[in-house]
Length: 194
Ligand code: AMP
Image 1 (cartoon, helix red, strand yellow):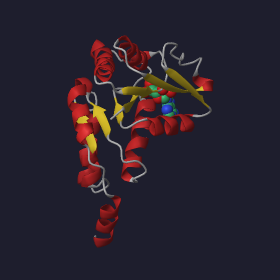
Image 2 (image 1 turned 90 degrees about the vertical axis):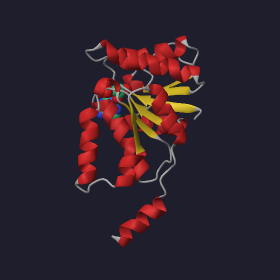
Image 3 (image 1 turned 135 degrees about the horizontal axis):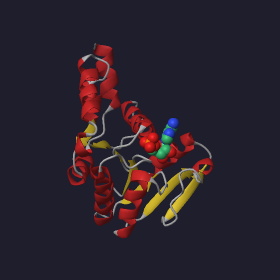
Image 4 (image 1 turned 45 degrees about the horizontal axis):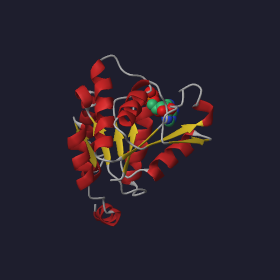
């Protein structure tokens, strides 16, 4: 992957482990020569991630809605910063510019962005890997819920397996690099057969 989009909190969380994880991911992307695409803010985990990636020499593309730039405080040091007109445009642009998606711990905004990319996987609107970086077990309950959704028949096994989860950046990136896109034709055929 030449570029990865990272979704994460505009807050930093209570424990310093979240900041450390965002910074580690930033350093790791830089070390691997992977361009970081993210929401362009300088606050919370978003800021930590971007600062660390910049310190290690990464190329970074920020995508931020114009109306947000004051509130979220657009990062000043990025390689490039795109201003867009809406949250929808932001997500579309971040998706178009990236070879894969990672969610770090965050709040509703992070979840919204992560879920949209996951549902686009399911609909075959993109064929890029989606990963959860499960720092400090932050997503344990969500992962259990995904298994529950699958067990109860609301999420297909293939779609559950398409979501990649790891507790460190190196392992997650390795899984993402090996990711094989789902074949929607097979999925549709299975639906017809059941
Ligand atoms: P949060 O995880 O809530 O701290 O938000 C992280 C990122 O998600 C920030 O870049 C926010 O701009 C973005 N965000 C916040 N609210 C929304 C929303 N309703 N829809 C999409 N993105 C959002």
